[in-house]
Image 1 (cartoon, rainbow over the protein chains, first blue to last red):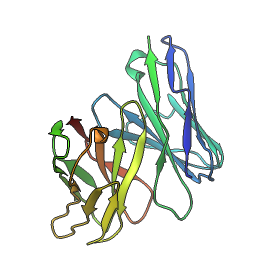
Image 2 (cartoon, rainbow over the protein chains, first blue to last red):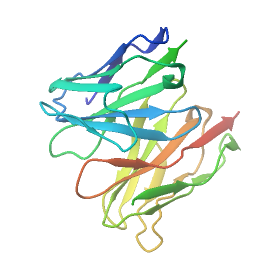
Image 3 (cartoon, chains in turn blue, brown):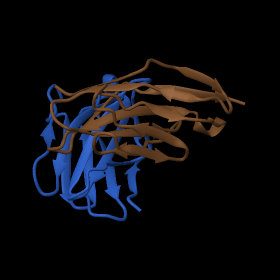
Length: 115
Length: 112
């Protein structure tokens, strides 16, 4: 149980375009979802936390107009990288947790390459 | 603020060797502590956790004990396998809130 999927697993896009990444909890209702960014050989950097039906809370230094997060249902959150640039290339990972449980369950990640 | 410090990697061991990956933390309250593992090309998987002092988390032969006096949560395994090759992350979560704070990660390579 507690499976989280992400789609796509890998995406290549041109500079200036927007990319949407989906994060789904497959067998539980995720009251909270998290979006992380991971640079090569580095730790995970929390970008934002989203609760179902409310606006995401962004970490300091993360541009909320560039990284749009929507958590419209208890099983789906999306991250849209708007007007992507090469420096946005990274591994994006989502995680989900549900009310009363502290464990976060992680998705497999999405590798974004902006050319 | 909260922080987690892991021993620097990479760590290279031979199969059946003993593994220790050190992890220390700084927190204002009484956090829960976690070890996550990331296999190549995959997302993180929860390996084990401990929620209060002196608790021992264990899974797949790995163990870690929550030591409040030394603010540590070192990961150990008595006999590593090639399949244990991965990146290991120590993390903490404060009692209030849901935010995880991760260490830098330690790359483990186990050779046959």
